[in-house]
Amino acid sequence: MNIPQVLGYTRIAGTPVITGLYTLLLPPVAFAVFGCSSYLVVAADSATAAVLAGGLSRMAPIASAHYVALAGMVALLTAGLLLLARILELGFLADFLSQTVLVGFLTGVGLQVGIAMLGEMTGVTITSNRTPEQLVEAIRGIALIKVPAFALAAAVVLIVVVLRKVAPRFPGPLFAVAGAIVAGFVFDFPGHGIAVIQHFNGGLPRLGFPDVGFREIPPLLPIAASCFLVIVSQSAATARAYAWRHHQASDQNTDLVGLAAANAAAALSGAFVVNGSPTQTAMVEAAGGRSQLAHLTTAAVVGVVLLFLTGPLQYLPRCVLGAIVFTVAVELVDLRGLREIRSESPGEFRLALITAAVVVLAGVEEGLLLAAVLSLLRHVRHSYRPHTAVLVNHDGHWRPIPAVPGAISAAGLLIFQFGANLFYANAERFAGDIRTLIEAAPTPVRFLILDAGAITSIDYTAARVLHNLLRELAGRGISFVLVHAETPLLSDLRRHRLYDVIGSDRIFDSLHEALAAINRKPISPGAAPA
Image (cartoon, rainbow, N blue to C red; front, side):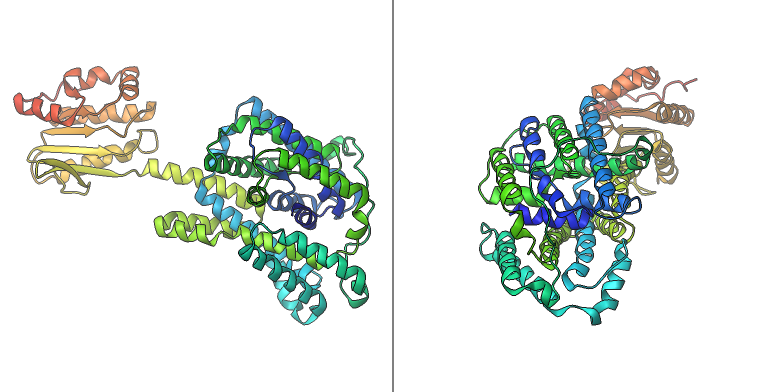
């Protein structure tokens, strides 16, 4: 099942067909030896292949010997970055790509790859490397469609999709490819205008370092860094998902070693960057694979194909390879995931769509960078503009209401909730919200109680803002009381010399205790801090 897919991925990567088979030979063995995940399939992948082609297409002719050498060096550099990440224990970096943005990113990759395959499937020559221009060229070339090639590609897509629905365990792509090879031999496809991949020499790869000059390495570093980010995020997400599904332990740092070894093996065996593939992992699981033994078996079978069965592959139509990759691209377009995100979080749905659009319109590298930035910005935005509330007594229970001007907990009492840690970006907003509530209160505020249940830390800038706020409140005769402050926050308050300014007699474990103290005897505002 994987052989036709990796052959198709070479069309995305721009490398000779045989390099796809090489990605299924030594890299899976290296990951099985050094990795942790029992399910993750490491081989050629559409996302990293697209990143590779986007960077190398301007540096060397597609599929040339120099292009292959550059691709091998990118794999070697990527292996170095993955090993460095393991040394620095950077497995946590995968957490900085949210599931929402990852869905959008993979959807964009699916659209990009699907559009790129239109030329292969229709026989129309497409020269552009950018997705929008590729789509325009494909539409303009409708009159030039080679009907036999398009009909064959459509039949393959139909067969794969139908078999995927009615018989998920049946190797539809392999069945389609085998049938196309037989038909290509019997009916002389080239003579009927259907291009084939042509003959290529088989045999095991020659081991050695990529023949790339030292001066050519610096331009390859950004490409390797992009591949590194794709691999870390996608492989970790896939490995964690299947570990969770099968109640197994997941060690991202050990998997980084396995991924580094797999990419080094790819570089030394004439292949290109390999990645943990969600689609191929899903196929292995569906076929009953439960350990890396399945992947070692795959490597052995591919070795047999390289030694004895490359001859028949010369009859494989290129439109069939394009159709196989097209079906994989369609699977990456996660409409179900997008619908679920939209129903639960419209804001995150918009982020997913923006990420997908940038991947399609600008490129995979730009989309990946945006995905990471958007994930971080969304987190920062929640911290910068957290949920705030004023607590009011409702039938004997304190309930939150929006912290809007005029909101008050009781006559002379304001209980304020702030839903994030205090740091340099949101400190002025925190103080401003309190000032606004005090100014707009229908009765003069005598007591301000801060519910700090969601505040676990405070940085230097926020501490200075709070210091000034406490001085201002004391000057206005308003007593400041702190409740639900956990040990980390109290440690920060002591370090910033705010604990004594607030006063231990105005810090309580619960709101009930604070209200009882206020009712028992008035709490003084305290001296204005210097």
